[in-house]
Length: 324
Ligand code: SF4
Ligand code: MG
Image (cartoon, rainbow, N blue to C red; front, top):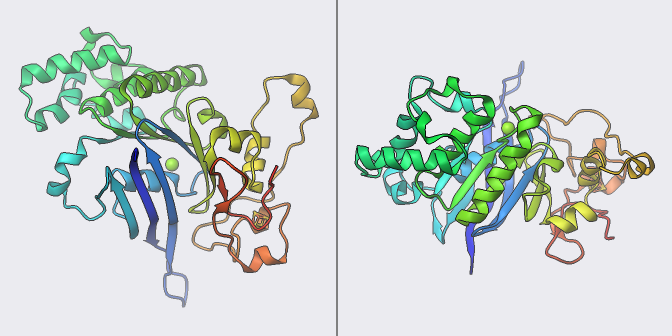
């Protein structure tokens, strides 16, 4: 069994805002998320902002405590481990953040930033500095720039430092939370390529979070689409991109530009009605129903469960999935 990460019923609620005369209800930011990730596998996790994908990512690496559900890493339930009990596993769970400048301490040199996790592991200062230089080289930066500070690097270079820091402890799983969203379009592909190369070379499992299906298309093996705190479709990349089963996935894909201009002209755009609803007041039944072009009566009353559609282990949560 090559399952590295196993997530079941993962749920996170936050206290909602109190309204006049009514008690504050709790907001379900993540609502019963479940999936497995194999060693060395890349899963793309995609959805509009506010759908719960960052919250999910943070719970996987224990930066945020789940309200309910379990996270098992390498067959060990890590959900309720204390920070001390978690220590041997911590080095295997790392995260890359959206804004590299905000996630790197501006007062520290790159050497310090990259050495810190190694010093915690008991490496000597000299060995840690040597390893920091190797890490810079690994992510395509000049190892002689060890004594610079983060602000002396461009956004793309700073994100390379963020990646180097995540790699410092030799992790087996990296959660990358929109690692290119804050970067210039011209450098986004370079960073995605770097992550893809490192993931291959080091055999990492990677959860790549993005708000756009086109960003993860090349890099992922499987893809999961989230809407309002839930996974609405998950499956092999080719099954989901070539034959999306869920109307929401179909709409997201119809917004991705096609490289061939003739195909682009022929293609029909699915325009979604309205904005994504607030997780504080999710619609009844299928929470996508107010925006869904295929909605029927049953959709307003009954929440569809994730169920198999077609082959290749794909699942969708829809009463009327497209089975191509
Ligand atoms: Fe649309 Fe109904 Fe499917 Fe929800 S269950 S996605 S409303 S067709
Ligand atoms: Mg986010």
